[in-house]
Amino acid sequence: MRAVYVETLIDAPMEQVWWTTQDPATHPRWDARFSSIDPVPDSAPARFRYTTRVLPAVRIGGYGVHAGERTRPDGTRTSALRFGSDDPRSLIASGSGYWRYVPGPAGVRFLTGYTYAPRWGPWGRLADLAFRPVFGWATAWSFDRLRLWLERGIPPERALGNAGREVALRTLAVAGVGALAARVTDSTLAGALAVLAASVLAVALPPHPHTPAARRCRRRPPDRLAARPPSLLEKL
Image (cartoon, rainbow, N blue to C red; front, side, top):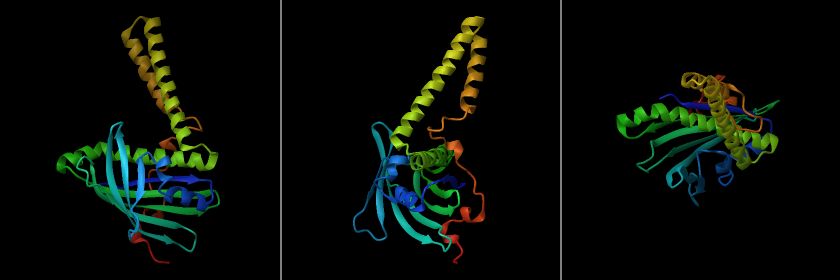
């Protein structure tokens, strides 16, 4: 299975990016993949439990284990972890990943790479063909929501509201175009073609600067350092 990779550039101090992403209480505010993260007291290595809300009344739990941190002489930081879930409803059985923070003149390159083993046997591998891209999209969308928070001061909750309003407006615009085309031409086919064209345009138009967008994030490693998991990093 191909690893998920996401990267964004955040124009904010390193310590602020580090704290906002490492603090268990703050992390779920911007990361759509988690509803809550609760550290396990006195655990060594540090462990935590998490929940993810997949439906309004359905939450799936899992666990994480911090596998270590490393700071390079150039200021680059890496945080590694292992994760998984004992919940049989969870597609993710176990996995591992890393976060890397690379300082630069334009800000902090914040990036992640992770992969996991799906459960449910062949059916799980089949389901993962659809789930993994969606999970990667959710990661990228969350990274851009974090960027908006730290760069522009837009709280994650407001950014979510901005996204909802923008989706609603674009949906209404598409429906309106279809209804108008069908009425003017008195043709169902013309209305369907108008809806299709409007839908393509609605998806292609760039989002508002205050709305999170996964498309703003890089989805492929640009260099060898970014692509290396911590276990393969060269010691400096």
